[in-house]
Image (tube, rainbow, N blue to C red; front, side, top):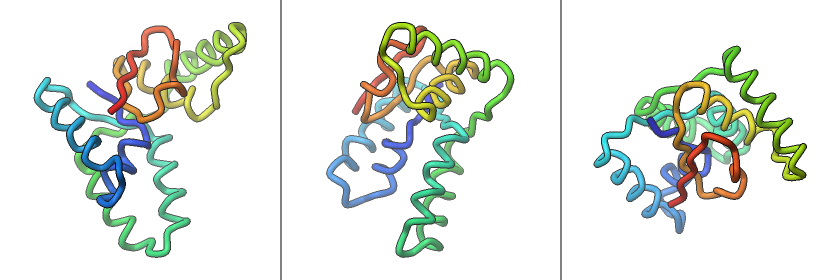
Length: 136
């Protein structure tokens, strides 16, 4: 399975984005490899912020719901909470702290058995043990 970060979800939704084509191509590549797709509840929350900021929330909610119907949503459970703590402490100890949302996304993905995270911001997830990060 591959976990889709908010960046690729947004690029898929924004057809006029300069990153739209590369996001679509990355999805096709993942499909050709037989990868099933997921995202985390935290990525969904970030999309909800975008809807709230939108000049057309009903349209954007519809578009987001259509996109999310195609992917599994990973929930934050006990193993993910422990994984989040380990990631956060390890990154602090090495002097490379990351944002809580990025740590929550990585932890949820890892706890669900998704070792692959697809993002346009690979540096946000650098050097997290067990997490493979791919950009597009």
